[in-house]
Image (cartoon, rainbow, N blue to C red; front, side, top):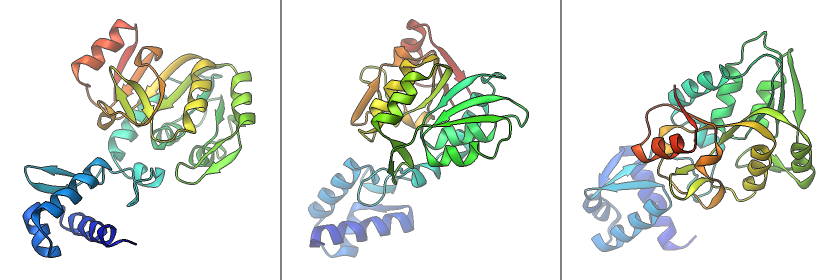
Length: 258
């Protein structure tokens, strides 16, 4: 590991432990110049590992990334848990008896499956280990699993065969997740391998429902997969900025607050 990388890891440990540390104090603790720490915190902020507010480095508690900047579902699942639980409960209430639904990967969809009534009969197509672990325990749910190559960071399985299965399936509703929701640049995810799967479930479903907590609005991630106008509804925990509500309303979509 290079000297700069070791210093940045020590910097992150300090900020995580203390919650917030000024850039001046970080420079003193690490024995380097103010400009060096300012450059380090700038790089770490770009990777979403911390935030710098008025010269103070603040721990990003909603972080969904590991120290190397890679997306981690385990870390994402530990953030905004109360909000995701409410979103999951609201989304579960949209599912009717005997529906066929497609459940996307992510931590919010796991909460949704947990809130399904015990007596509901539903066909569920999924391709993520955490969702699978919740679905298989339900006696009244018929499970369809689209397997393939396993991605440890997202617990997702994907393959051409899995996408083909999704395309041959017709669902009443698809519950889709995202890492970023931007009114102009669309709905995005962190992992490029997710985009073809998300496109397939959107195109195979009669109603498309986006599950996104309020921290996702305004963000743009590297892998685009849909426009906001392609969704019939968005379930979120608080009212998004005006431009999102306006864009959704213009497209005929519904905003559902949990």
